[in-house]
Length: 357
Ligand SMILES: Nc1ncnc2c1ncn2[C@@H]1O[C@H](COP(=O)(O)OP(=O)(O)OP(=O)(O)O)[C@@H](O)[C@H]1O
Image (cartoon, rainbow, N blue to C red; front, side, top):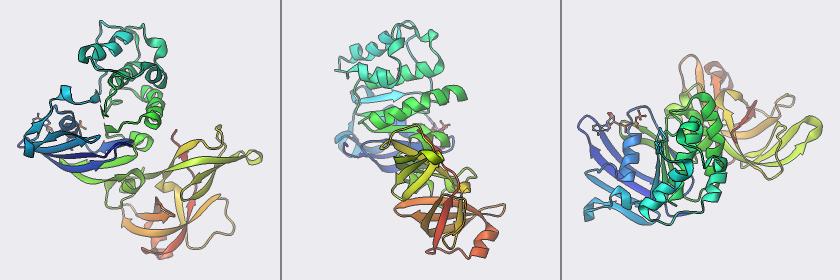
């Protein structure tokens, strides 16, 4: 793990002002999430040095790239970064191999061992192809490999899947998940897709109007009741788990999480395999006592951390299950009948989970 990223920028476009002061982890994927026009790309461009803020400070991997107080501003070409855009922007006259080598030749920088990157992104069989003979997803995988070939200290990705159709997105997401597990450098990833947040983020930054509304580890930030994500009908919490064992007689797999052990429909993976589990708020119900007779296999003791009324008779309940946060959507009537209050000890019944990797 490298040193955290420190990013402070104040940039005034007149109609729009970016004003952020952020500390991001030095490894893993930090997702910048927010509506269109909230300033995600502008923040990424400030990190890349493509945009110069009137005042700012940026430190990556212990290196200071910008410090307005000292009059320091490294131009983009002196910043060790990879940048992946919505469109792959490959050189059309160069093969995949030529595209991958181009950056290395131009900068004269020592790159990384490409073999591993090619294998991670599943493009080793495409080296001789020209860009127009690649699918959109393949082109984007080559663009990511090209960014990584320079052995950057940070990888910046600006909605890398936005230009792809649903099928291509599904095709490329597993590669991004693999990268996510294997990359040692921090990734700052811009999206407004909740699916990409759930699948890739370790750390989530929610932006609005050029400011940071909330930032922190994924599950904590997803389940903040004062944030729009928790109020959404699709609200969910992502937990990390490890496959513990299989109950083949019942076609079940037991998964260990920090909140306790869960039984899931049988998974074709060995014990010890890490998993990312998504638990939809609508799949969590609440009981005041441990249900003696229930068909729901996963019932965990929990503490109510807060309640937020939503429209249409819905109540969003924040729960703490061991060290992990969890959201439940119950009807407002149920919240009243159960007398739910912050601090109450309850049981969270998890009716379903989906596996994200
Ligand atoms: N060079 C510029 N000059 C003036 N205003 C700009 C400039 N670049 C961006 N803006 C404005 O800054 C605001 C933030 O834009 P930005 O592209 O950072 O948002 P975003 O969150 O990335 O949006 P999207 O999800 O649509 O890409 C917008 O209102 C945009 O019009």
